[in-house]
Image (cartoon, one colour):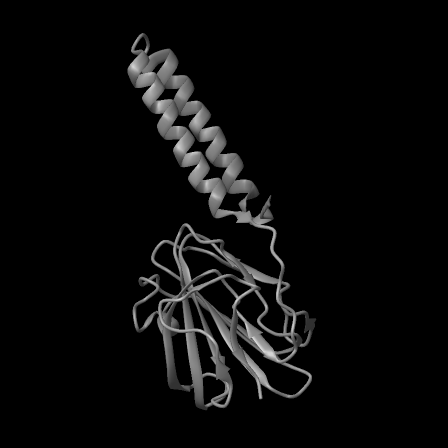
Length: 220
């Protein structure tokens, strides 16, 4: 396991703040009160570990298969439905949505290999990630990748109530590899994936996904 580079500044800042708090508690705030000092140290350690675990990148055997659409994120499947995709396709697609809680790994990965045909970033609100309007009103990105067989898959990074920054590493027109890192969402979020109607869905509601591992669907 390694720590993601997006966490470097936050982890260092958190460490500095917690060290300062513990120094002040030992020297001034709770001087002579061993119970309070130990409690402060214990709480600080828990907070530090919570921040560190958020930026973890576990070692995994990633799924590479040109006919499969893999999960771009860790989380829980909260939506599987036929819907009208109105931003790019302007037709019906099958939507699969994955909710990412603060304790999930928050690296986002490309679901297929191909060419990035479309990319947009939208600033917006920070509604809770499971809110029906979060996919159209929250801070978000939209990415469309076209596989070599011509099939296009659209997916969105959507900020949640706690998230305040979406990071992406893809650009329109570039080639990307399946399961390679495409971005990161900080502190709670959601990813929507839109696949063709004739794709075979391999997950069910409530299922836990692993980014780059779980197969969401298979292309015909």
